[in-house]
Amino acid sequence: MLLVPPSEIAQRIVAFQSLLAAHQVDAAIIRQNTDLYYFSGTVQDGWLLIPASGKPFFVVRRDVTRAEQQSPLRPIVSLETLKQLPSLIDEASGRSSPRTLGMELDVLPTNTFFFFDEKLFPKDRIVDVSGLVRQVRMVKSPWELEMMRGAAAISHAVAQAVPHIVQEGLREWDLLAELEKTARRAGHLGFARVRGFNLEIYFGHVLSGPEAAEAAYADQPTGGPGISPAFSQGSGSRTLRRGDLVSVDTMMNHNGYLNDQTRNFSLGPPAQELQDRYAMCRELHHQLRESAVPGAVTGELYEHLVERVRKAGRLEHFMGPHDSGVSFLGHGLGLEVDEFPFIAKGQKIVLREGMTFAFEPKWVIPGVGVAGFENTYVVTAQGAEPLNVTPEDLVILE
Image 1 (cartoon, rainbow, N blue to C red):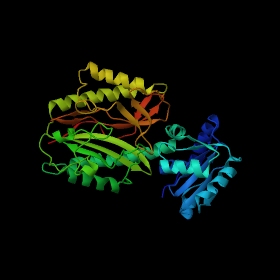
Image 2: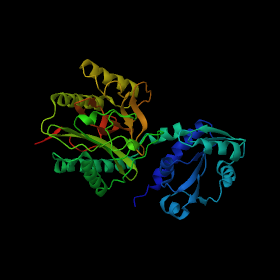
Image 3: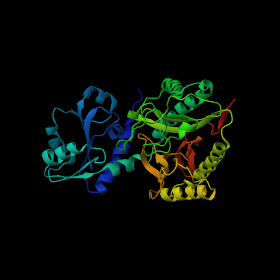
Image 4: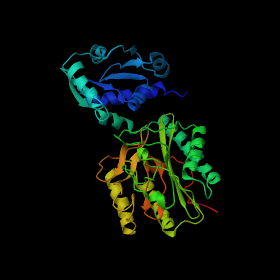
């Protein structure tokens, strides 16, 4: 089992404590699994108490033994009841009520907030520190980038398997199943964490032919029909046919860290319209690599890229069919699918070295299909460097 190095945990907590102090928050109470893993190295059921200065307390309900094996933090305290938390916060923060306490209010259930606000900490002020958490997490360390490169290697294994599986008459669903098997054998954990409410991601979208242009119900460019209205996205039951362009969009998970990759394959030459859009996609990736440098503003990057599409006369069905196109071209990626920064309309985040995001310009053309590829990038001093190693060519299978 690959554990998070103690030095990683220490650096993250110090960076977060600096932000807590700057925002006059006495202590943060971390609960959500992704944030627990980031700051403690485990997702054992518990509450991580991080004061603005001093030693954190990891309060675990279950399982304390596994928490001690996986996390370098000490002390790890057994939690019998939530009524223990106020005295532990007193000890961790070095002061008693009234205080300012931070919680992840973007993801915390409302009933939990009310219980903390009205019952456990009635004299304290509870504020949202989710933005501070995400601010620390959006710049990746060399160790995190190593994990993300591991996820990219899984993506590569999946893409390499496609030409050996795709054939006329094969169902999309069966293609998906074979690719999932390949991914799991290569180390994919089988899931992807998402922060946004009601946003659900599984393996990805393996779509083909005209039906690939089915409008998405979620905030994403591609949707696909799926096989049930309970999760109406992704692969359906259609069979692959000559001339189909097959879009393989996967989200791979290596030790908690993600890689997002889309590659296109075609059973014989695809429609010329799709080939033209694929060529345009190459141009956008090239522009992105040169312009996504430290100091660039994400919203401005978005506008410049969209303007290039507009000048080329290719704005119709860009990032979604008809009028359903999304207003982003890239999303932050790491432990979650929807991290900061977003290459999106109106965004003000300034890029820094070590930030990572997936860039996915795509055309979703009703009655024709989907074209466009996606890479996960890291911001370097020279521009955006792709973490993906899979060739970006449109692969035409004869």
